[in-house]
Image (cartoon, rainbow, N blue to C red):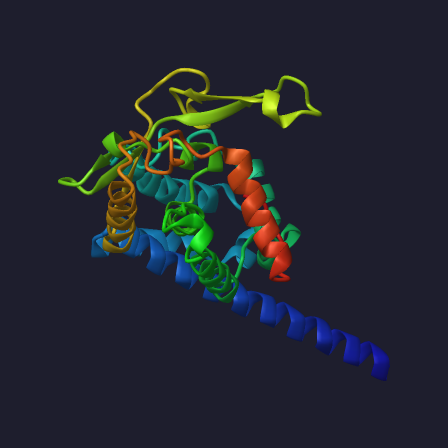
Length: 276
């Protein structure tokens, strides 16, 4: 009986800890969305209401009315994002009760946040090491990867979209960055990387092979400051490229090179890789 009671207490403590970590993560995400999207009080309320909804109760008693109310709130938030061109389409339109139940279970139990996201401490270590390497004499003051990692961390786009961002995509007046292209790799001989070809495709993965205008990302002061530093670095080396991240010849950085760099950096620092 004593062992059973101890096991039950441990399970309750573990569940309570998971719930605590879940809500702490949600609070941070709400704060991040508020800063990035410059949300009004009403919009913050809806985002907070959706993300901090009692997911345990929803798992236990998922009723049609509860689903309808939740979907209505999801639609309001995602419709706003579509209008502001932050995303291309509303993903909640086709959501069904059964899908919602599976999504809820998958997001809170099947995946551990630590398995798919680096901690802030990990990110700061990666940034610090990349900044240190950027100062090495062999690079003569021209180094992209530290800036790429920082921009990537803020906008959260795919690596293939990150490497082909262009200066014309950055509207400094409206404070918007347009994400509308991606880099594709076409293999020749898989044993010889020199035979790979890299092409810029005029649509994102979400747009499914046809250009629909891409999506807009609001540029915060931190992000704009990074872009200013990158531009100054290019000008100092007399580089006039259409690409934000380019080599000394003005050509875009290759996405597999960037992915490999981040992977190696994680390994050298003893940080578990989380994918891209």
